[in-house]
Length: 64
Image 1 (cartoon, rainbow, N blue to C red):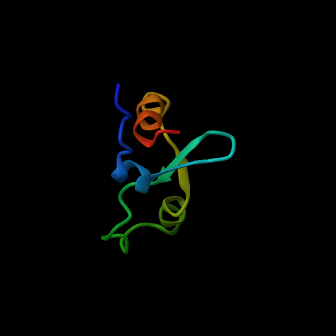
Image 2: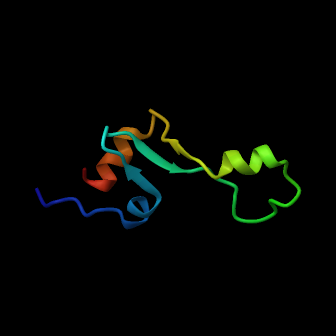
C-alpha cells in the first residue's frame, strides 16, 4: 500500500498540542465583527478543541 499524502489544508487549520489534543480557530471572525459585543469578540480570539467526532479523521489527514 502506498503512503497517504498529508492534506495540506488540514495541516494549516489544525494544531496538535503536546497532550495530543487538536485545536483550531473559532469560525466566523473574518469580518462584520464591529457590531458584536466585547465578550463575543474576546471569545473568538481563543482557540477551541476539535469535536471528538472529527478527531480520528483529522489525525488521518494530518498523519500524526
